View (cartoon, rainbow, N blue to C red):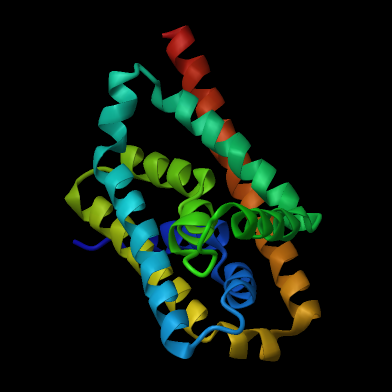
Length: 213
């Protein structure tokens, strides 16, 4: 049976980390002055690249970590710390600055700056370390095919929203405005900080339990 509660939880986490409304202005800036067709191609290609990476980690990430002898509780703690850093950046407006800086670097490094689908849009703006860590954590703690299906459905939904936000990025920037975007980023950052703290608490509890057993 489809786990709707897990779907909503996974959707919330992934939506906050990927942050489609925050990525859209960067995408609009980097494709400014190009044709509508080129913008559509970049939107679809960026999301496709990120989706490929994330689904590979979703299916094979746990095996990779097992081969490296990385414990699940260590993943919880590390993932929680990474998410908390991202949350702090969002609350104090550092994440947008970092994204804009990466975008400027991409324009300087890439010989053909009009193709921004792999870097920086696909990686790391959509499929960043925080997204990968959260996806690995949720998939590794899921129980059964139904739970995994709920998580993958949530990932697909967020990626679809990201694609739509790219396709309407220019229009979205006009209606949202800078003030609304800043408020939304801070609220999402606060929620992400709480979720990250819970990840760390669960990881520490798991470590202490295994030590006392």
